Image 1 (tube, protein in one colour):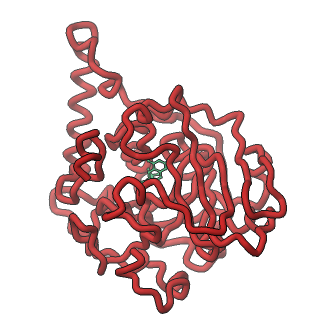
Image 2 (cartoon, helix red, strand yellow):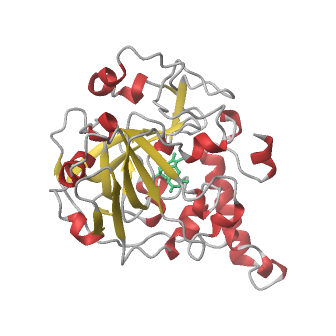
Image 3 (tube, helix red, strand yellow):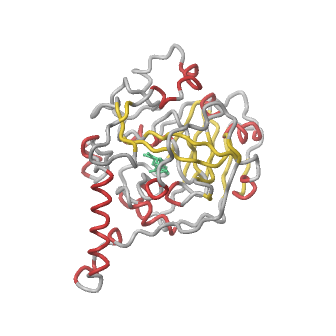
Length: 328
Ligand code: MTE
């Protein structure tokens, strides 16, 4: 823990997380400072203080509303500016605004995704071929971050199960691992260390095959902004946000349960499952409530966090009989 902290890298304590309105104010202030005195002494300010670049007009990517049970929540979607300006993507820095500042340089073409391990059809998929594998669907999912905030995002993509069936896992495939891009030339955050790169995540095979597990290529009716994990990312709505790896380059089918980046970094705090569970506290803070980004004005109430992030009817049976305090 301290090892990580000393390297400047740690998930903040819940109460330390900057409320969104304070953060926005600070951001405006920084922009003002950087803009106003750019040619003076502050010319030496790190790039982190530069104007935040919005992705601008991205190519449209639409899909019909998903018919998967539970895939379209009626909760109000988070404003686009929040979902694309307040991110975790540590390869681009640890501040919530770093991904929006730095991910613009990420090249998302050409891009390939390697399929490896226990499958009958291993190989390399070009992103543009992958895009056409199955009809796009819109899924409006709640995403609950382990840090205590949540968002509601209209993603565009299709169930990961479509790809899994296509590549035909062997009987030995029990887990699916997601390996994300590691490219120091494009990702300034890699130099900082702290996590073991590349950022890796994994699911049990039945979790990966669940129809709610989404391979997302877009959001808000457009292709994914880089800071949200372009050109493709996972979205597992009943698990804490860090399970949803961004900018995936490899999907591996494994017999043994692999370690994930967060398990390796802080094993006392992060387990393999990481299901959203209001009854299992993080060792340093409660998980009973959450702030919904966009609702966090001065008087906004916290929301109670729901078991499996509200997806219990759909996924509860995957964990029947398991002690979720032990398998956290
Ligand atoms: N994927 C990669 N490659 N690197 C990361 O740092 N952060 C995770 C996850 N995927 C992360 C990642 C965390 S902690 C969260 S909460 C979500 O992405 C945030 O997704 P969002 O910024 O689109 O809301």
